[in-house]
Length: 207
Image 1: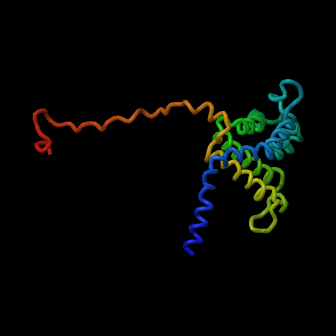
Image 2: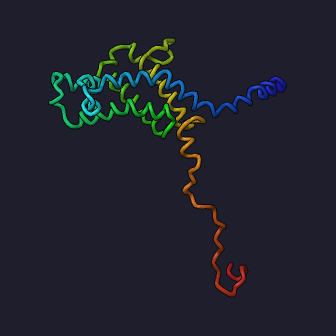
Image 3: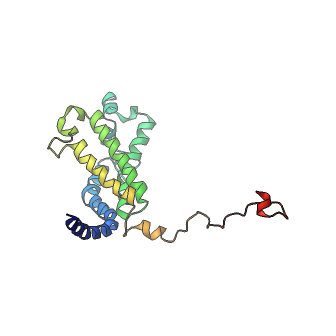
């Protein structure tokens, strides 16, 4: 049994050297799977014209504040400045945060921001759009069905984003290029300070 465990250990230990590939692979999968989804969703929130990024569409408000929009019969002029700021910020985040992860720039902060975005998105789907009433939207764990929108798919999204949060951007990234020459702000180690003792006395006399 010991020899079998030794062989297993010798065969699998070298795999730990691939640890550095994990953040790069996570960013690649994010770009391949989720980035087009978020950018397409962001495009539906832009208003008309060159200043559409400052004037979100009516659909943007309906997606983010569905119940508030129903209450004002989809007349965005009746919403507050807070609603406007949240919608504009959310629209920008849907473009900027995925772009930062793609480029590997301020990756930990961007990935953490995306986790927050997905959490808010999921809560809006559940409570604003009535997802709690639909088992297929909410999903469930340990139910042999892997396609629930919130508890299955979004949980995997968040796990994917946790990789760059914990491990950074990886080898091919702007973070590595920008921060490789950054000197730590911590001052250089100094020799320990000498204990103060009155002049003319030996250590034994000061003890």
